[in-house]
Image 1 (cartoon, rainbow, N blue to C red):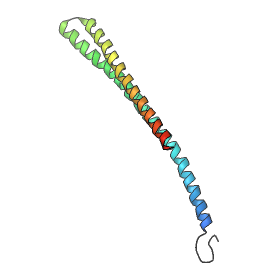
Image 2 (cartoon, rainbow, N blue to C red; image 1 turned 180 degrees about the horizontal axis):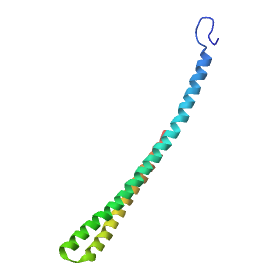
Image 3 (spheres, rainbow, N blue to C red; image 1 turned 90 degrees about the vertical axis):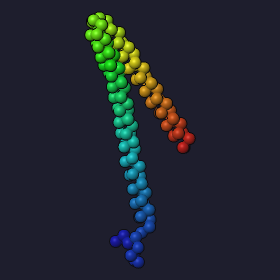
Image 4 (cartoon, rainbow, N blue to C red; image 1 turned 60 degrees about the vertical axis):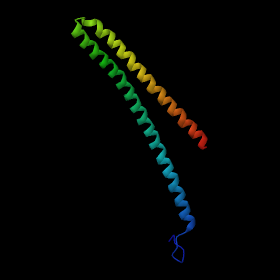
Length: 114
C-alpha cells in the first residue's frame, strides 16, 4: 500500500499531510479571530448603550426624588435628566476613546511583529 518494504511510512506523504493539516488549522483560526473581534465590538456597543441609559435613569431618579421633596414637579427632574444624559454621553465617549487607543496599540504591535 503506502508503506515501504520495511514497514515505515513514506516521509514525503507524511510531510505533505502535515503541511495540509497546518494550512487547514490556519484557515480555521482566521474566522474564529474575526468572530471574537465581532463579539468584542458588540460587547463594547452594549456597554456604551448601558452607560448612556444608566446616566439617564440615575438623572431621572435624582430629579424625581428632589422634585418630590421640594414640590417643584417637572423642574428638577428635567435638569437632572439632561445632566444624566450629559454624564452618559461623556462616559460613552471615554469608552470609545479607550477602544480606539486599544485598537491603535494592537495595530502598532501587529506592525512591529512583522
